[in-house]
Image (cartoon, rainbow, N blue to C red; front, side):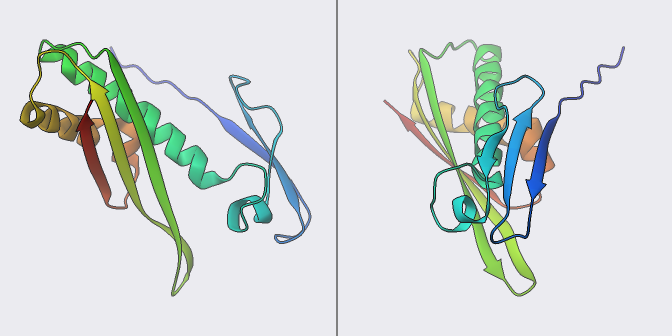
Length: 144
């Protein structure tokens, strides 16, 4: 039996790239016409941007994958806190997402740092968002 799930996000964009504006929505309604634009992406103004959305998606996927692998190895996390830093930089051919750095802090009873690092590394390699990205994905782990 094959499982195939499709989820969607959408955007409406009005105007030119620098002075235009967009609105991001998700199928679930978690985002509904949330604003984004050049200024929120490149100038630190209010609104969202594709890189933070990709980071949130990657952090969510990786954290769930970590919880799965922990359970398979007989551990249950009390808490997993993940941040995904997505790097957008200007390269010769324009802008590119060149890296994702995952930072995971966890409270897991009975686990040692080496085992935790191996489990988190396995989750990083196998979460669907990691598999979808063609940029280097680094991982930082910290037990608290």
